[in-house]
Image (cartoon, rainbow, N blue to C red; front, side, top):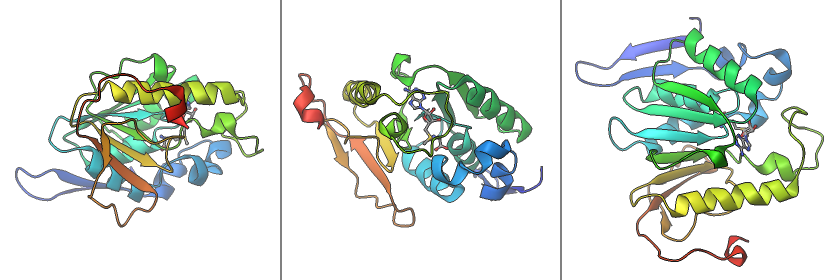
Length: 221
Ligand SMILES: C[S@@+](CC[C@H](N)C(=O)[O-])C[C@H]1O[C@@H](n2cnc3c(N)ncnc32)[C@H](O)[C@@H]1O
């Protein structure tokens, strides 16, 4: 397993695993490799986010829009006592992510195919977003691939749907965004004072209270 270092810190302590960007990206098909730095979370950011998302062993994290699995795999290596699940609607990326997890022998990660908004989020403790829906509103030529249509209506559906799901999550739920997700989390979430100083553009939110009553569409924008 070139480029993958496993180091055990001592009896009873988690092992520290380090995956380099190069060692992950070189396993991608060439067309994805050139897009990796734009569309996939860098390893040091994933490790930082993983620690913000997990407060105790057994925490289960959902990566909303998992791509080729880079965030989940790097996070799972960094925090082996927790579970990282990625949901991704491009089936070829789900197959690739599961193959990479097997190749790198990462047991605490799994990728499932589907629209993230169709998934039941109630069993997850924490959520990670690397601006997953932006591609649908982005007219630029530089896209992950051409298998998903640009559709601003779908962008709104996804952002609003994600906020609705976060609104019904339990108190204590943690949300980490990297470059946001198109809106801020709903009422009841507070930006955390745990400042991820080494990872710019990461933001941690923690749900501190239940707000009764739904949000109106106007509150989204
Ligand atoms: C910017 S990439 C981030 C990939 C991964 N989270 C990472 O950080 O390495 C966003 C991914 O979200 C996926 N995506 C966007 N909307 C989605 C949805 N509604 N359901 C599932 N996947 C979605 C895209 O196909 C893309 O692979």
